[in-house]
Length: 246
Image 1: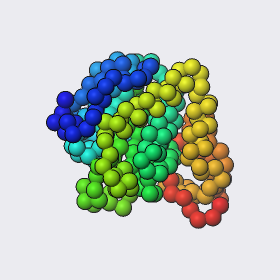
Image 2: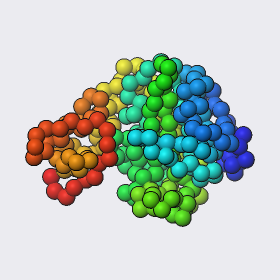
Image 3: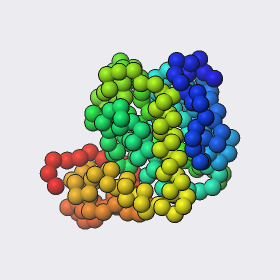
Image 4: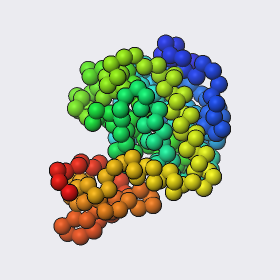
């Protein structure tokens, strides 16, 4: 177990889950928990690292993963499960809510105080899937790189108190397990509807890249259907900025 985990009650007792955490592996340092999950596999295996040297987010962006500050972990899947990108932000939101108010931002970020506290990345390779989750827990403003200071924050910054990473991890994995069991039992649409409601952008005017328009629909795959001045556009991924007015 990493020295960085010793100050937390990180899974000090067994998880009470049905699927997630069938095996839990902790590392002081890895290049990427997603890479390790895709390499090792094992249905429901959770890979946790105190530090990632090559953590990444969507679009190949690097993810700042310093030791002792956040939760950096991935869950491995040997069989396809549709809806992971819907289930994960909901699980994080519900685990964090008792500590500080937070919201889901399309497609799968979690924000607190209008700034990002969590990023989620689903990747597949050789018929395996990894669900990666990174949560900023203990960061102070000076811990973020200059380019992120105005965009990111941490749970402790918002809560104004110490947060036990182990207790938070247990809550996230428990919430995630609950929703994955719903997905495995055919409840994709129920989870998707909950995610659509959480994103709260239907009817909103947004900018995504070069496109500005009103969100008219969210597709079954999670894409946005925008009504723009030049016609209807469908966007599956991207960074959105909410505009004034509808």
